[in-house]
Image 1 (cartoon, rainbow, N blue to C red):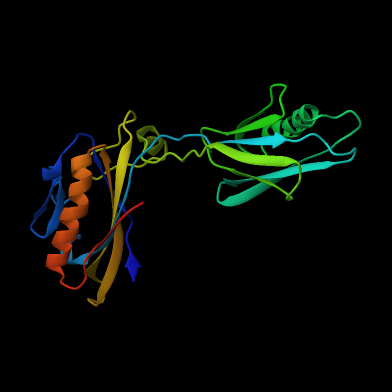
Image 2 (cartoon, one colour; image 1 turned 90 degrees about the vertical axis):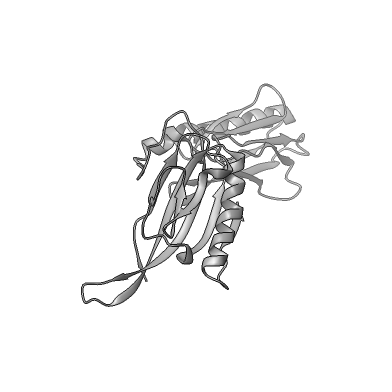
Length: 253
């Protein structure tokens, strides 16, 4: 099966439930008639909807208990997706005479901060303000990470105070990525919900042989609860009617 590049459609104003319809066998969003003429109702395979959101940095804490003895090992790891691969760094400290939970936490925070400064991990900070708690905060560009104590009974307790999330549908990010639309363009101040339409259509190659071509349509639209609901109900209904026995799969992420 051949594939074509996805199309991007941006809807910058609220449309309501009447904003989606069918015209000449193609789905119509707002006034963008036939935004992708090759998309026919019977060829829509599935739909995915996701709500847009600005990035929220994850915050995790590592609480230290007082050393049971000199030479107690305190170790945890931080794992994060950097680029296309996961990177893991190790933060470790061995207690010395006179250490308390606070001095151990301070030492561990210093090690983690060094790793951040060197670029080994993309956190905003590893903070400790004279307490037994280290506060790890994700960065605005890479908000998610996972912290794990290396051993049970290690004297470290890891907790998540803010789950965080990656940015999705942020206009300024889309502009920075160079994404442009077939109808409107992204606006920097908008945060868009996203509808992904996976479809296939028939085409002829240079030898006039029929082949199937698959593609995607990304519909970015401003927050509009009525329009979101209409997408799920209406497209599910029309694809069912147009291609009996091959109903669209509508899934909210």
